[in-house]
Image (cartoon, rainbow, N blue to C red; front, side, top):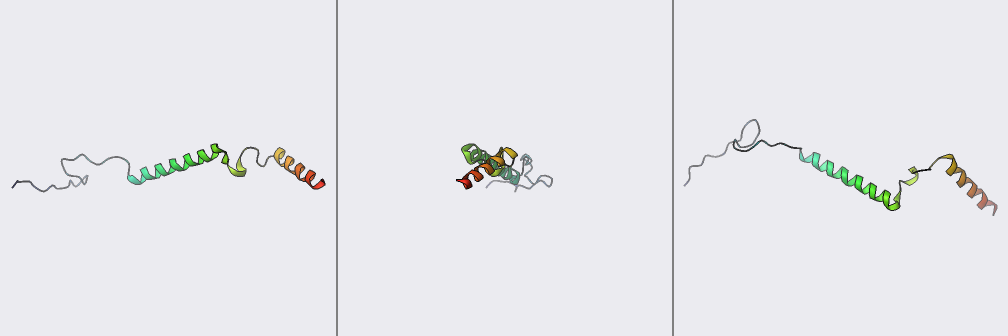
Length: 79
């Protein structure tokens, strides 16, 4: 049999005395960061693939584009 003493955790770090202290980011921070990056990449891919940003894109709501729509509707009603 060997004469090994049971390892006792250090009170300050919660690790064994011969182990380095645990450092780094918590797991929840890493998971949140990965999810945020995944959402941003998905939005970028949809935008670049032509999905656009709905009615919030360029020209939506300005006077020139709404005037063109109104003219098209009026000419369609006349026909």
